[in-house]
Image 1 (cartoon, rainbow, N blue to C red):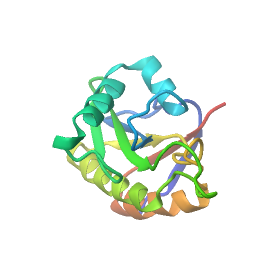
Image 2: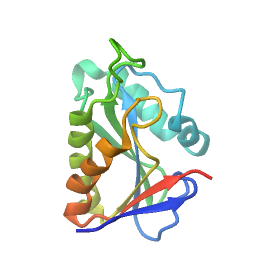
Image 3: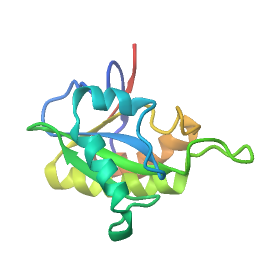
Length: 158
């Protein structure tokens, strides 16, 4: 089992050699415009375009909570769009994060990472606009990625 590596820096600028997948949480409403996605869109246009097209054609694909989409943005960098946020705001004081969807997404990312021998890079996913708690997310990362010997890097900006 691997430990989670905590780094100071920008998750859109991975500090490791080899193939890398940058993962982040997306909502299930097709919205892209706040939070970490802004940093992604500033560097690459492909993840947003792919997400919007995925949402637009959702009647004919797997767009739903728990689904993932991996987009190659450079020779060795991929972005993983993970749908694990239901809606945009708290409803009845329940945060939009869906932990079961996070687990499902990370399990799928683990398979993709194993195929291309990639490390995983992320901010503290699900803890910003999605309203999640890191003490709930971290065990899911350990279970799905670290226990499968996938290197994980979590970036704290600054």
